Length: 316
Figure 1: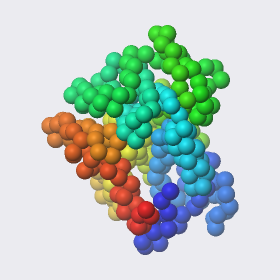
Figure 2: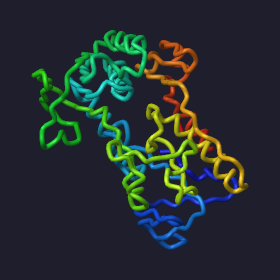
Figure 3: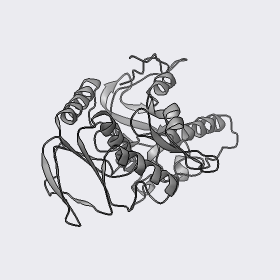
Figure 4: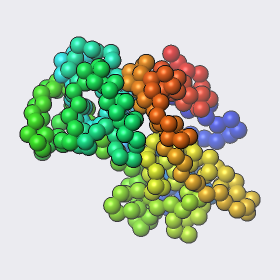
């Protein structure tokens, strides 16, 4: 959605293609470029992120297709009477709050396998505050139960469906959103070296310097959701990783010592609509409410900051 035409201020090129293979000193792409299909490199940063069910992330490859996805989902919600959200992590909470705050006449249900919102790695006070705000919007919260998905799946989730939980609770809905199940996009890294991928998590193994773990690939870095760094997978952390990677590439060029990435304390802001929500500050694990969450995220969802980061003017 955000154009990349101002991304580089001092040279650099953008290639719109899919990398199919990573070799030690080149990547192979599916599109002809000025280098052909083989693009050589001295240093490589792998930042392929994660895939997630819609609407948290799109499946479309073009802006036009992405807009069409959003419009279809928005129209389905607008025309629905009953909306089911499966998953009570940050994505599910934010989506439930977004819908319930706009459409107060609709029935919104959220099913979460845990006994409370979020997971135990977050303070109970944060979960309780978010629960209170969703209750105030009449969101039906079903804890400690898992949806049993039919073998055929739920399609695009935009058609009426009756689903059942493992505890026998039947839920009718006109629209269903699956708000869990992020998967790291690490498949292409297997073309370089399959041993770099953790079998149980499919995350890529990195050193504290964010270089790939194997010494043969000291010139290749990974960052963001794909790494096996022990921390919650949140978008802002990719920027912290990028700072370390950029410094380390310069350090390698200049034969200097490399910096190590050190995971910081948890920090998160979860909006409940445009004017409410709750968050966790990194200092003292302080839980904050709607006023501060609105200031940092709820009002714009930080879209303006991403436009600014890519050096383009926000298109209203």
